[in-house]
Length: 516
Image (tube, rainbow, N blue to C red):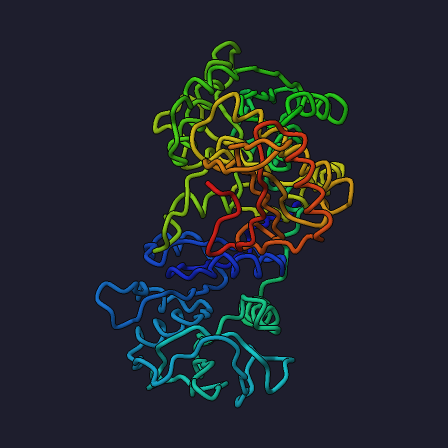
């Protein structure tokens, strides 16, 4: 008997918190399916979604601000369990006629939470536990029917619940790692309060997604854009499981690939998968479009548009192709469009924000709601080798966004050679498999140097190495000095046109992983 992974699910209403995606990650880790949607989704949408519970995220606003995000009041009449987090708790209280005011002292960082009333939310946890606070407001007067179940020195109502209805709220953030027992609190909400069972496994995801693809595609054919990276490879293998030979994979050389990339991708598909792969060399077409373009957003949109045009040209040559498959992930969507809530667009991804408004092909994006580590877990379940699954992410716009400024054949050659040295040395020392990403960036500046007793005025290469779990946040890696020195020495000595190498020691946020 097949399992419907969407039979049990939680709905996360986003009020603009920088941590909203972390809530989804923690819930997914419990093997409970969830989706993030804007705070102002209609009551009809919520009823149709049929969640077993609703989580109200935090947010930067104050409930008494003009134009502050509000809660759809009808949600409170559904008798569905609700957990408000930070602003989510405040808007829950405010909506039920509680009083929220500016706190005498802003509470940010580590705090000690003390449980004062027995509650399902804290079942099995210690009476005192550390938690992460980030708020300037607090509840002064609880709504009727609510009781305080935990407090801190600065928050008299650090956690609350209704005495009869399944409404809960916490002033702290259980989703961040700085709240050690936060996952247990979310687990209690999901399992004890919402009665979820944890049906959302990768095995059930595969079964459900394959059925959805078959139903959507029917007897038509699909072309899949592959890059050789984890996301597009897993997408191709998953769709191939669903429709077999009706999948046509296309690898496009867009002219901004790494050294030897095209040959490697063709080899991987030929030697590892029995999937039809066509190699399309459009190097000059893309480089001509990128000529004299320096704005990173414009680069992304040009590449995104041109990709689609190439695929549409290819599809016209084959009858029965109506669908284009892509390896779009959740972080791509989150960073490209702000429909998930009152949060800012960071940058367009070539396969999301960079798509043309009108397309002749319908999109299939089976990984659109997954994070990178979930994709790797999915790939493992599909039998894909670790060497492919643990390959570092490479952006769709390729080296175009690792060359700051104009993209030319000469500058591409410099970056390819430098980047190849970085990757080679990282693999040789084993560091490649320990970090999230490691790559070179060509900067739009030249500096004075001395080579062979002669003055030089040449390019600067930046090395970027970060560790991360899902690409949403990242920290720079403290590589051994001798490794950094060896990489820098090789680049300067072996790559003509470079006389200086620097190391990027910024984290995300405030920086992004890629420079553009």
